[in-house]
Image (cartoon, rainbow, N blue to C red; front, top):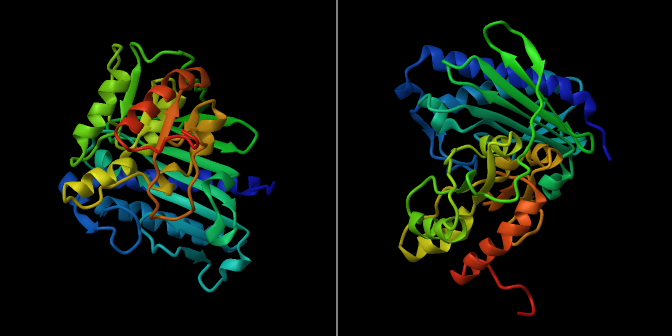
Length: 335
């Protein structure tokens, strides 16, 4: 396995620079300015890009340009051209040992209105060109971008096979301390948080029906946290027991209603999945296979996160049956 350990400290430091730059922008600018649409995502750079996203992107590219002076890097990031960026400029993609998949601000919408923390996400894999996939990630880092009124910020990272590590930063004192996170060990969703994602209109009735069928038999709560990295954190921290992001499966429902494709989770949103997996969280696609996707900006990714394997064994068959009844998941081969 390729060793990317030498990249860990520079990426941690870069995340901190991005965090500080974005918090400063949130402090100095009104929400209306930060929420101005900078790009509709039609250029292959992912979802809608807002003014606040540009702050993170600029700091990211500058920081990686500095890092790439010692070793060329191939960067795939939301907001940048879909074909990626090779740094330093003039270097060739085939000369890069490492391919980085980055979301500079995951959870933009909640952050720009100062409703909830966002996250900086980075996954690093050996460069296999267009064949590089999420399952190739060997190093991942995710860092919380706190609200202006919030003084604590968490940072998590993992090197494949070495387990998750985390620390908490105090913006007031500058102190950092080690942080221990533990996913829930409960084998039921009763009296816990379990969510079927439905951030956007267009097929909420279908997703809500799945929610009611799968989760409605017990008393539980939901948390529509519009940040995949944030959702993974909530699973790792033991706050949530289940998150099911099934949006790609209901694109056909939207099409039948004459609606354009809806916004979905993309690979860069899941580029830190390795951290969650090494913390004990179980991540699967709706069919039950490990979550995987190409290192690109366009693929729609459906995923389900379970706090532990016992909970998965209870919930997954019920969820899959609900999806098959609606024609959203193929029946197992041979049935």
